[in-house]
Amino acid sequence: QMQLQESGPGLLKPSETLSLTCSVSGGSISSYYWSWIRQPAGKGPEWIGRIWNTGRTNYNPSLKSRVTMSVDMSKNQFSLKLRSVTAADTAVYYCAREAGHYCGGDCYFPFDYWGRGTLVTVSS
Amino acid sequence: DIQMTQSPSSLSASVGDRVTITCQASLDIGSYVNWYQQKPGQAPELLISDASNLRTGVPSRFSGSGSGTHFTFTISGLQPEDIATYYCQQYDDLFTFGPGTKVDLK
Image (cartoon, rainbow over all chains, first blue to last red):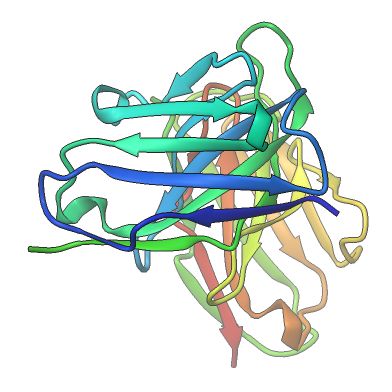
């Protein structure tokens, strides 16, 4: 059974960089797309971006200027960096897997495995 | 960007009731819609993909339909364990979630 686990600091100050890691167990990180999704309290989820094991990425256009994702195949992990955070970035951050294999182009799949989420609060 | 809207934003129903949620896309997205269930303190869980395909293990009282810009999610007989917030999500071009519909018991 595949499991995903987010880790990283839960409290940041404005202008700092949010750094989170997702550790994947019960399966290899290869062959699938891996995403970060966030959800502010009381709101719907917002997709942040995704990465393939080659390092190829797609980002949400609204966050693209501040986001960098990376993958570490040796550790079966992938990571998120979000620069210059503000209070608006306060949310539960989830990592998730898409239920389809890499297609070489712009193809998208449902999210079938999710981490439990980690709350990140931005406050001075 | 493709926007997703849902209605209603919340509803109250009794056990056994038929519950219907609608989702509208800002562009034609074919059948590229998923439906998720989220219970408090948990991650969303995929119930339906491609507008109408029930995920393995999901009870048959859940169903979905629609194509283009208008989609419907139905619970044919509400159970206490179905109390949750439901989200539609498009995956025709990147990913966008709807704002959610909170379902509780009357």
